[in-house]
Image 1 (cartoon, one colour):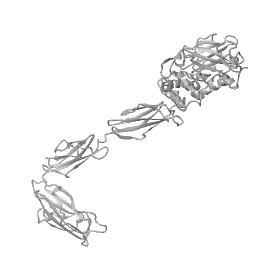
Image 2 (cartoon, rainbow, N blue to C red):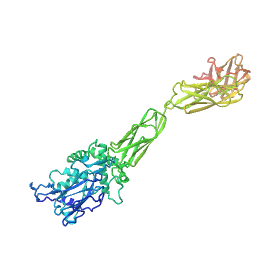
Image 3 (spheres, rainbow, N blue to C red):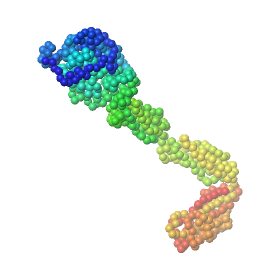
Length: 604
């Protein structure tokens, strides 16, 4: 009794595919001629591909049911007589004629020998080397209904149909055949693996080809890429044995399934794929659609340091791409730890480092998706960030004592630059002489500036690294006057005014300084006060100020000293004595914390 199930009849219906669709259509050698010329004969055509197998031998065998000489009742078996034989054309196509009466059960189409161009590597490979003596096989369920109605059959032979053939097992019932073919199709997200003729993924797809044929083509290329990336040098036969063992159990492992999907992405993004659609979510649901990189804001690092760069690659629905999807990195500056990597949970990380100063732009790319990492700058932590210039005197004196110029140099990392950092000084404008063209820092670098030009200013520049700062120092000729302003110091308590001040100002002898009481006057907050000076003692001026109404804190007196010719006093020649000092309020009580100091000294 012939075993025929509903699923077998359904599969038979799927085999009613017009000749020449998909990637087939060539004219391979046949036995019995092309087409069903003999009454009752059946034309069988199809494609053998991994990619397209050229020069392969095609043989067709019958799956014999128990009603046709099977001594083991109700157990179908594979016939040993070749029903038809031919060869595949350059595009993998074959055309055979099955003799009358040979389409009462299922069929097995076997392709041995021949060669194909490997999709991932472009290498020409032999079927026998990769798949062994048995080559590739495809098993059909009961075909009698389809053969009677049309006289035409079509069947594809691929590594996927070989997996299904191996998965049927010993019981070649229509139900077992249909189940095994469907199981493989489901595991690899394929259309019907028998009736669908795949395209050649290494050639541009013809216009109007079906999504199913394109999907099948990508799946075959995925196997090729999987062999290249994860096959560890094994043959396709070894890979199919491993895949078959997983399918016989709980199905493809999560790792294997992810690697095969990632292999599809990696082939689609490679140079051997001329079909852009396979590299987009429209043609490949697992293709990279977007990349998001970190750091997402500009980053600054010290030279010698490194920055981790992470790219997350997402599919069109926002979920992560399959593990193993390749991501490439490129930069215009610095050194990457790797130029690419494979995703794990959608993520790939590399590091960027540099031993020199500069700014890097890094691009991450996967398939057609890409993203630019925010600028990463590498800086020398000891490089000069700023220079603060100051002069030891508010003004210089022509042919007098030099003015000390100080450069406080701050590094990029903060704080002073290392001791020994060279600072270059130069006269930018004016006529002057520097004590040296360079000085090294001990926190601060200093030079002295002198000038013989009367009544002019000299501008000095200081340069460290890429930073330059300038300062202008006015110079006067022989000074004739030193104007000293005196003020109270400390904090005046609230609701308190100063009623009197007593202080002694000392000035250096031998500097040509002299002063008369007439040249001493109340000023600032002391205006309106009674100021009694005593200039009788050389080198001292005693000041006594009284104001019964009270004055605020701050400047209270101005002293104008005459300078004799040939003398060049400085601000350091004036000071307030620590004795004889008193600051009282309007009630004649001493105000705690108050003192007297020099507000300014102007030499002119």
